[in-house]
Length: 389
Image (cartoon, rainbow, N blue to C red):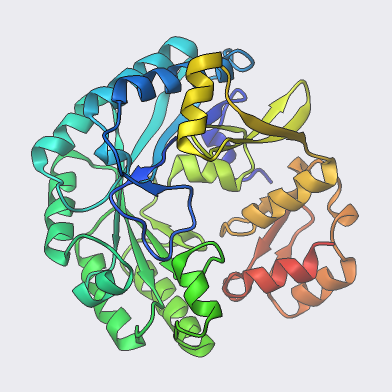
């Protein structure tokens, strides 16, 4: 049995992630490598920095077609459209581009106009991801978002005017959030008929403002039963509205799944460019984990002065590769094709745990595809900790 999404990544294709580290303000739940803009940005220097970093990455991978390109952050929609166009032209100069390449730009509501969206489409984008997060001004305030509900709806309308393929993010289980509130919010969100939605439960990360508040006892979150009810309602409502889950937090009409993210979950090769960007890349049959220098200024100075990216690089053992592949792959509703793993499944899991999880219907395994059931995905962190040695 072949995993249904393998067809998206022919001929050893790769994905590129371009990280723009700057945003207008840091959200209290955010643990990404992003920093509020404090000074004027020299876009010419940053463009040159990305050019040099792309050239360095292409030196070892220039024969491999690029299947997806993703501009994330931070807030890359703060970039001039000309910057995006120049970077895409450089990528096309360095690599062959898959004819069906998916090119995504993350945007935040606020300052989003039809003219701006059109400019990004002209620059080469064919997909947009909008960070709405909540459709209540109360929720937006608690989550530290700078935009209003009205600005979110204006941005959604502008994006839908120019793009067939787009998605927006929603977040539930924030402080004070109730199931009834979430039912109303999600119902409103689904009424806009986006072809894709990413719907996340708030996760409190240690290296975030919310993380510090939580450990001081200053952050009161909905209890586990309420969170479980919110998750189950989300699965039911999206399914009923033609957006079935294809991953634990991602829902799409068939044909509008995120190619770029599927690459991550299938453990395909990807190259991260920019401060703090991560890569997983196979070179001469060996798989490497790489991460760029996280400090934006240090990253830029290094690349401009030496034409080399400051980064850590470590070869992954077969055991590490399988663990990583299972941790990301079990998030998908179609599971993991164990025949593609670097080692036999029995070498990295507890067979007694697998048998128990199958009996309890948290896991299904036909000898090829290992899949978490809907009930299993609801408890995925505990499930993987129990299963993987």
